Picture 1 (cartoon, helix red, strand yellow):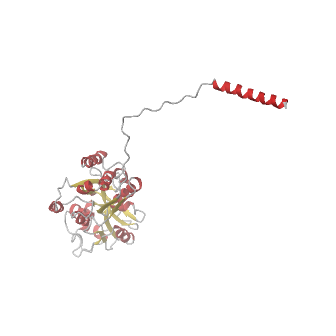
Picture 2 (cartoon, helix red, strand yellow):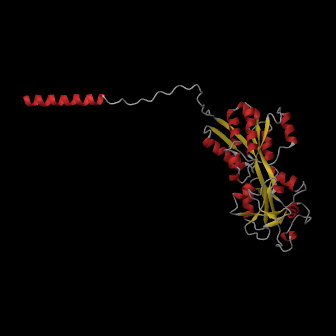
Picture 3 (cartoon, helix red, strand yellow):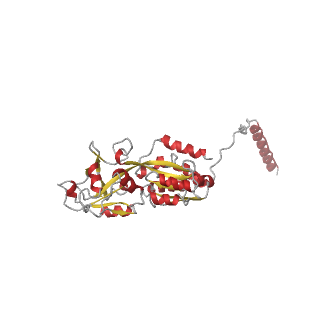
Amino acid sequence: MLKKMLIGLLLVAMVLTYTGCTSEEAPAEVEPAEEASDAPAEEEAPELSGAVIVDGSGTVYPLMANIAEEYMVNEQQGVSVQVGRAGSSAGFKKFIPGETDFSDASRAIKDSEIEELEGNGYVYGKDILEFKLALDGLTMVINKDNDWATEMTQDEVVNMYISGFYKADDKVLWSDIRSDWPAEEITFYGPNENHGTYEFFYETILDEQDLVATANLQQEYSTLVDLVSNDPYAIAFFGFGYYVSNQDILQAVNIDFGSGPVAPTLDTIGEDLAYAPFTRPVFTYLNAKYALEKPQVLDYAKYVVSEEGAARLAGQNGFAPLPADVYAGYAAQLEALQ
């Protein structure tokens, strides 16, 4: 019993000694609480919902669809951006009566279309805003098996598409262009009148001279790709982006504008570059009234002209981007709407 009591006293003494030692250690330093800041907390972008309706140019479609996809994934998952490709002219027919928020176009809006908008109560330049998205190069495409027409002069391209220039019945042979080319009839293809690409080709390239009567004009660019890829004597015209996405089954004609053949590329497409005669801007038009009424429309418009929108994605879709200050100017326009 005595032995157990002595052991207990010894343990108590050891505990007291340890406690005394530890109580002499410096207390842990406590970080001072951060002082409250008078600066307002940065507001997170509001979550938006609803739809944004875009229609118009088939040429612009791949670029605008890519912008829409990036926006819905990375910016506003609750917004549905619906992008159509009816064609520039067909798109304006929906935009003018207010059926769409944006109208994509591979040519500038016409005076007659502006008059129709104004007849519907819109002030062009205030209620309707024009944004250039990028630059496109009109591209002449041929079949992969065509090894004779890989280079042509601008005049040869223009003249072969003009009705009656080579043959009264427009059944033009490749040998009519150059005598050492095959004596086989050329199959002419292109987009139909709904598309700004047709209008650019007809009005600017052909100077409003009638196309050959044998030209097969199509609504869908995918149809043109398929037709040319299966016809060794075919030729067609459309935007550079569609050629880029199908260059495994098509080849582009290098055009000689007077200083040697020039291939359409992102390095040659430009209003002051080697491919300038076949270069054109592409556009989207915004209904600014809708942008003020529907927050998702304004937010999407800002994304389209931002560094993450057309500026970044143009090149990935076969378009030459515009200078950064052009997009910045459009962004300032949109900020001023609020």
